[in-house]
Image 1 (spheres, rainbow, N blue to C red):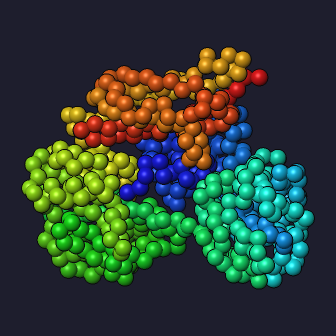
Image 2 (cartoon, rainbow, N blue to C red; image 1 turned 30 degrees about the vertical axis):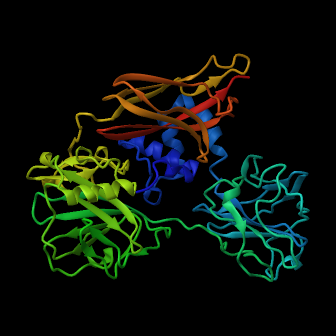
Image 3 (tube, rainbow, N blue to C red; image 1 turned 120 degrees about the vertical axis):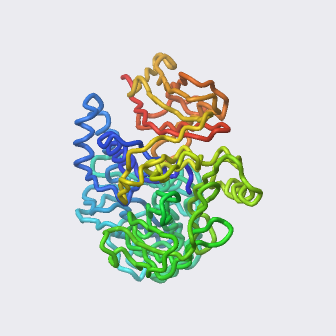
Length: 524
């Protein structure tokens, strides 16, 4: 399981597209969008915006225009005597760099040529061909501040800022001025370039320099794989568990999951051997069977489903937990069910998951109520919701079970549920008036099933904290309302743009969370 705001490390366009998919398909918005499975073009996304939000069309198109190509990043900087810069195309499509510019604190450094920058490619800008042994893609007088630091800005042909590196008035985040130099490398292209922790000293040695010009960074933080347990069947023999690979961490190229295993925390129910899974594919592990495993989805007659088998008899239908674990014994996902009373061993297992952050409580009544899962029923996750609680799950009809689809289902609603419903923001967009600050505000209205502790936080589209509106304070069940006046933690008015509200509730009965966008405009 992953952080509830982990999607904020993705791109604005991916997030916007998922908002549109949500609106178009009438399904709940998952907090962790399945980026690799999203087959929605930019053109289709903008078409849906126009179709569903005509009053906001001009605003959203303008605000998104800066981000449609924002995945081109300043990736590496050698700022010593023989200087070079490297750009990386982190998008999934080519980008034409004609009339793009790079500037520093003193002004324009260079205008880029009319070239198509391939997806996943590197563009090397050198001050002199002697800067490396590797041929440059573009020569420019860089004149970067050596010992004083600098601030770089990459802009597209329309003059919109696509990326930045370092911060104004600060020394370089990393790198060294030495005979061979040590470049300053970006660790994660999805995180902001003005974040100091996202840069470090290169450990590479390419082109006669201590860097990686024109190649993958030595410090690159690769995408992590992610999995969700999607369905569990323990009432209708044979028992089985279905696990979805949200991301293989290899851009769909596949992940070897040898020695991953599924367990009830007592003994492994199934240790996986010689299996490769790709983003969007599903493992189905069936109990009490000695059939041979499929090693890839191509082995079977159901596209995207890998059938695995275990001779273990089956799952306990009263009190049990199922955990998917990687080859380093790290918990990837978990689900728990109980009839309300836990034996000592099961209570200890639940507490282990709670301490590991894989379940939201160590109390028996936080588990899914197994008494509600009668014959011909199974457990099914709501979309890709992942709040580590029973609120993520529904009871579905096993008779209409179809891999990869959501069945008609009944919500599991504990008597003390912290469920959020009818979340609305009005007005949206919010038009701020600098001549009368504080007059205009976003009213955030929502209904709570029961009293709960509420956390409400505003982030920008890069995932940076903007304002904490509510900090875990208790609010009553029923209709509630919060306000945001478009100001940050330092009470400064925020820039025009798209912002993200993250609303979370918790109580003894569980947890819930919602995400919604807020558009901020400004009157002249």
